[in-house]
Image 1 (cartoon, each protein chain N blue to C red):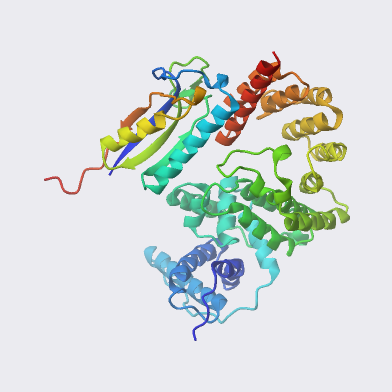
Image 2 (cartoon, rainbow over the protein chains, first blue to last red):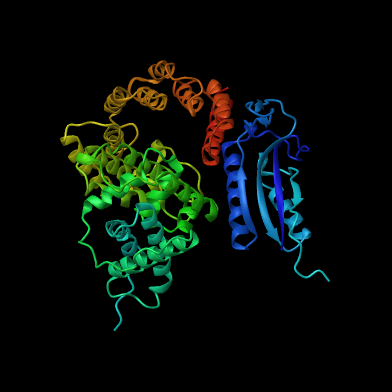
Length: 135
Length: 391
């Protein structure tokens, strides 16, 4: 088994195929989208492939050390930051193919007009511990 | 025939008095709690195979042995002389004061809220560290650290209820936090908070303890109707009131009346009174909103808070119309969470869907939970639909 991080972007990712902003959707379309997302996580729990999923608030900020005895420097929030992560899901699956398959399904969440959203999801493999048997 | 296996509830119910028994035998409260936890974990594995005849006696004996082992290895490690090992006979039957003292100890003002909550769930609630971790969705090592840090700051604090019962506010605050955390993890913290508060009201005369219990019961009664089957949020006005738990409401109202009869009002009683008015109403429209506003005024008199002012603005909007609600909202600072959502709601009620729609969108962007964000997105879409439909 190998773990993969699926990253969803508020913005900064590549444009989705069905790129109507959510604030133009009907209430039914919003509800159908949300229900799909919940069902997806539940289904992966049942197949034993779900590890974790979290949604992130939009207002983040940057922090860095500013020398001993000084308070850290903070900057933000940035209304116009280029890349903004909306949330993640961690899955634990048999193969890269399976990770791609699941990310593809997640990307097909229903959106405006009931059509698949077709958003780009970033898929990042975890660095694993060294295997016990290496030959 | 072997004795029936005592269920986990029974096991957990005797935890506080067992800790108190160890303290009476000379253990410090923090060492007693450690030993109790060790005995609890052993009981959970041993009892299903070999149930004890007297669960409490078993726990006291095993916990005391765990305590002596810990003292011995501690003493040996420091190269000091071993202490007397004689096991004292069983102490007198513990009384309720010990359990109350344990509530105070776990909610000691020197503790952070997270530590006080974890320690209360363990020492008074009888949860294992693993269960505390599961309830708060944190790794077990993290929960263990919260507890051990808590106990380091309590080293030297005696197990004793303050004279005359003392100020229960720290204890009530901890139980309120447990209740409010809800049901995110595998352990039902709502049921746990109610159980611990029920026990507390048998130990004290403080009307605010009754007020807190009433508040919990009245909110708990609506639990099943607050979300749809697939997890979406259902606002109070849209909840199916026929599915509210009428026995919990009835009990909450009786408990609240007993509290109010003492004539020492506090914030939990006032919040419970508001919850009771909602529970009593056949529909949102038929709610006695004028009385709800009066109770919010009582709450403000007990202590000004922007969150109370925000909720009051919603009630004013219902009692006196959206314009009055919007006027009340002006007294609420801009940075209070959910303020934009309330503004959108009141603007929508004033009939201005065109202005409400983008406000709901704004509120969704700053929502603090996924369920709330989703709910606000749907309301934004509905408001937009009304604009499109009328335009």
